[in-house]
Length: 181
Image 1 (cartoon, rainbow, N blue to C red):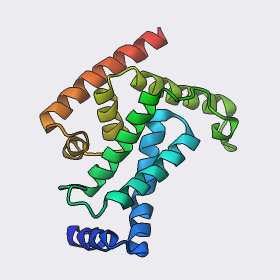
Image 2: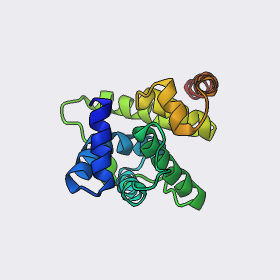
Image 3: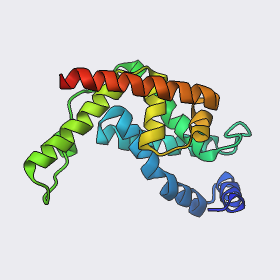
Image 4: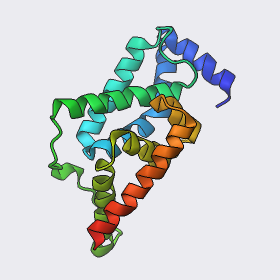
């Protein structure tokens, strides 16, 4: 989408145009959900918090402080704040409901187990990073954001993002190496 098209869409959303809000939701909901899911590892909770992100967006969209340069960065910041708030409350349930366990019919069970183990191992390793490092690694490598986009989301310079990425990747190598040995 062109910048002027997005600006027009956001202006319509500021007037609470249902079609504009629906288009924003369609455009960003999967990415926001994936970000939250990768941080929490719980599909039901990720769905709830994703809905909360868009409720907060609607509540704040008319504010002049809503976003300064990057709308998507602002949405990710809302998502990040909700995840942090959730961790602060200490409500995170480490048990995954059976409904959240993926069913892959065409994949050999051993391959599915290995992929699941690798994914869980990565999630566990990312959770051992500092909050800032985990956030940078998730946004950069799972969500595919550029350094400048990550910097806008976390409110740091691109140099700080590069430093957090470097330290986070080094720590991940260490954590994963320790688990394998």
